[in-house]
Length: 248
Image 1: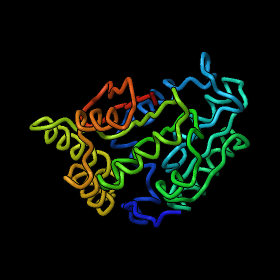
Image 2: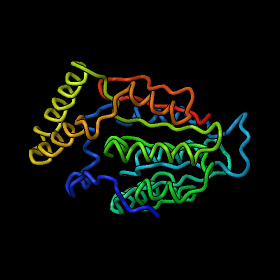
Image 3: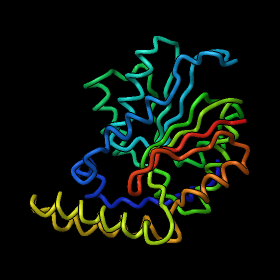
Image 4: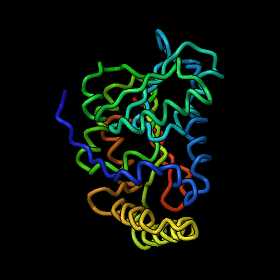
C-alpha cells in the first residue's frame, strides 16, 4: 500500500457541519442526482461477468451514497457499492444516513486514502468509479495519479464520472468564484456562522489556486491521453461541472 499523500483539507468544524454546504449550493443534491442518473446500473450491452461493482471516492456525509444505493436497488441487479473516505468520522455519518434511508447491505464503507486503495485493487475491478466534490481537494500531482489508477481499475467500457468543480479560464473563473463566495456570505451570515464562513471562503479560494484547480480543457486533454474516450464535462454552471469518461 502506498504512503498516504492526499490533502485532508477539512478542519473539524467544517467536517462536522458539512451538510451546511447545501445552503450555499442550493442545487447541490440535484447536481449529485444528475451524476447518478447518468450511470447504467443494469449493465445493458456490456460484457460484465459477475455482480455490478461501483467505487465511490469520497463518501463525505453520504448524500451521494444514498442516491447511488437507491439507484442500484431500483435496477434490481446483483451488485455492491464500495465507498471510501479518508475521514472515519464522515464514514460514520454516512453509515447512519444509509441505515435511516436505504439500508447498507449493498454498500461497503472503508476509511482509506484514495490512491492507496486504488493501487491495491486489481486491474478491471469496477464497472463505475463515481465521485462528487472530492477530487478538487487533491493537489494536482496526486489527482493525476488517482486518475491514472481510476483508468486502470475500470473494466473496458467502464464509466468514470465526477460531479465537481471544473473551472473555466480567464475572467470567467474569477467571476464564478466571486459568485460562490457571495453565496456563502448569504447562507452563513444570517445564521451567525461567521467563523465557519471564514473557513469555507478560504477553502473555496484555495480550490482555485494553481495547486488544486481543475480546468475544463486541461482535464479533458489529460483524460484522453490516459486512454479515456467520450470525455465530456457538461453541463457546467459557474464552477460546477459533470464529468463523464469511458475506458476505451
